[in-house]
Amino acid sequence: MLAIIGGTGVYQLPGADAEERELETPYGKLGVTVRHLPSGMDLIFAARHGTGHAVPPHRLPSRALIWGLREMGVTSILSTSAVGALTSDIPPGTLALLGDFMDFTKSRPTTFYDGPGVTHADVTEPYCPTLRVALRTAAGRLGIPLYDRDVVYVCTEGPRFETPSEIRAYRMLGGDVVGMTQVPEAVLARELGIHYAGVALVTNLAAGIDGSRPSHGEVLDLMARNGKIVSRLLLQAAEDIGENALCERCPKPEGMS
Ligand code: HPA
Image 1 (cartoon, rainbow, N blue to C red):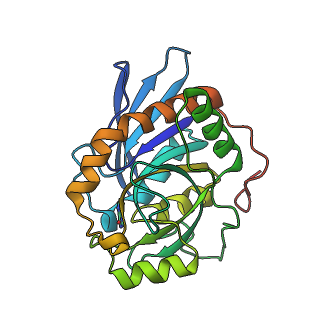
Image 2: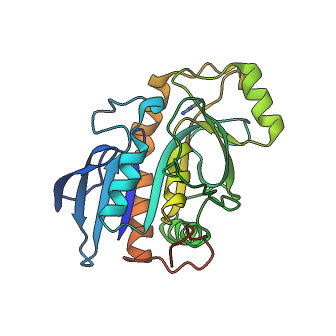
């Protein structure tokens, strides 16, 4: 089963044939919709911040989300995120695949592996290469331009935006874009052996780049204009991938066959 997690500005998928479901997890409740695609495939959609964008990034119930999706039989996730660019070479409106992340979060529950026992997830390649190829192929077929290389996502704690000095530092460290939601979501998926890929939509230049002063309004505005393109891309990729991605590269959690 494949799931799409919609970030800022992507609160539902187009098409009417959907059914609401709610489930309990050890980490709280999760609400999703199940879409029945014309091809016969079922697809799960979850709005990361809730449908009314009510939950701020540092309070996202990421463990309930990923645990719940796994309980529903999800083996692959395609996600969207709004991001600021750390360089004006990646202008607002650019769509980019995520290739790696850096974690600057501070206060979130970040793992399912809370002991007893010690398990370390391998995130040498955090984003599934097979799903990334599917996304690039779907974008090519739909004529949707993607940034030419996969980008490094810097995850900050939020909910404040960054200072210009922080942005300069993240750039020097090798980051390309900045957002507040990839960690722990991508890590939790890896811990449960779920293949995960992310598409980022650049909504703004990060603080201080070309004098930029990011605002939530600006982020929502750009997403309102471009969110549909992201949904189209994810839906196409989902149809291409089918119910189960064939990937041999992502590491499986210890003890999982
Ligand atoms: N910083 C952090 N998160 C973001 C930004 C930003 O500039 N834009 C969209 N999400």
